[in-house]
Length: 228
Image 1 (cartoon, rainbow, N blue to C red):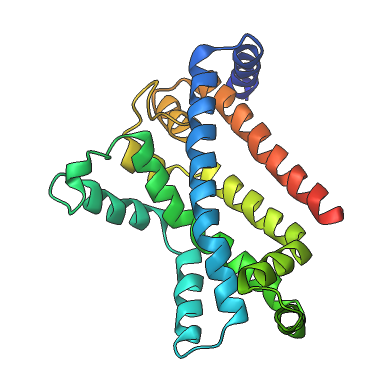
Image 2: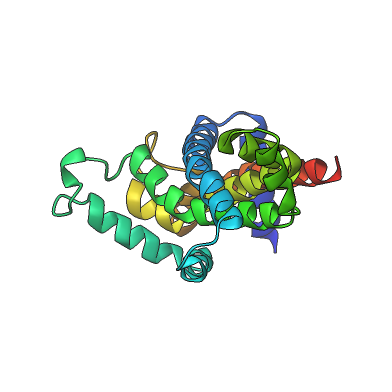
């Protein structure tokens, strides 16, 4: 047990001394997580609203696909995106593999089903007559959608925060698509995996503490929003 205590003290020391490697990994984590959450929201919010407010043939199938994506193994997501971005893949010409942008693409695939399903659930909880009334009063479809979004804004914010927390703690996608390049694509989770394998337990704990604070802050913010 001594090595656990010593590693914890060493990790705290690195955090409070501002170890550059720790905070650089934290910054990269924030960048790719925020970017992925933003893009996922641009896809998931309108898609979730559409599925909740519209009836069409195949809606049930679309819902099943989204529910399946929620439980899709992240290593499979990483593998599929890797295949698309590799030099032999259809998007190999873009040279996105082992870049922060490549990580963001993989994290978007992970995050957008979360945003979509949260949005769909939130909008479905509103009386369907609310949208019809807004349209009857002369609101455009876009304005009606905005009105409903305001009604369920707390649920939507929770969806975005949940998505952010999920992608920030992802390791499989980040290491497969980013390559764990120090100072460029090394995130907190991939750095933890690498340093732990090297026996740098204290360094791993320092990284873990920063990640824990990040995820804890996201959870507290989500809890605060739900109580408003």
